[in-house]
Length: 194
Ligand SMILES: *[C@@H]1O[C@H](CO)[C@@H](O)[C@H](O)[C@H]1NC(C)=O
Ligand SMILES: *[C@@H]1O[C@H](CO)[C@@H](O)[C@H](O)[C@H]1NC(C)=O
Image 1 (tube, rainbow, N blue to C red):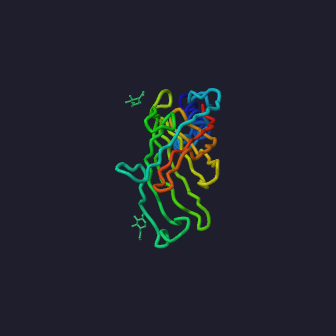
Image 2: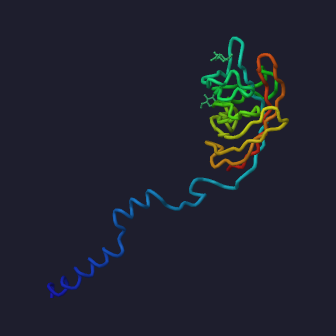
Image 3: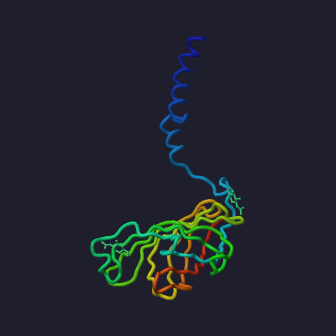
């Protein structure tokens, strides 16, 4: 009798294990790639936020916040400074006055990438230091045609409160010193996030 049971049961069990238990590869694959519900990450309604602040881009003086880190042989003779690369760590403030409340930094690089127009490739991160956005970041990548009244650049992502961010920013020159190129820029940010 026992012999009969094992004769039937063992092959059946083998078939069951073979077809119904996940293989190790399948378990690993599931760790590599699986579907999640947005709720499992605590995501609720997507919302649209508007932020407004000012960036202080200081190229000269005792404490510059933006420094040229690279240039091409043609940069200084180019009408557009083609090839210059500037590293920035600019303060963000609530108002245009540099002494108004600081709310974060704009960190990244901008580079002159047109031979015929004053255009900058901007690759920067806003890191916020105030309120519910403290520690959260937004990443901007776009084309900044600096003498246009309004320059629009895409938001390519974010972190913290800005996970899954998408949207755009609009930059306006508030003041610029023609001699030093020190500038105050007004930024309006329109961002979808959770
Ligand atoms: C180009 O101009 C910059 C800024 O004035 C200066 O720092 C740099 O030395 C110049 N480069 C050359 C190759 O002359
Ligand atoms: C922002 O977060 C940092 C790090 O957690 C903390 O030290 C700082 O006090 C916070 N600032 C504000 C204004 O909440």
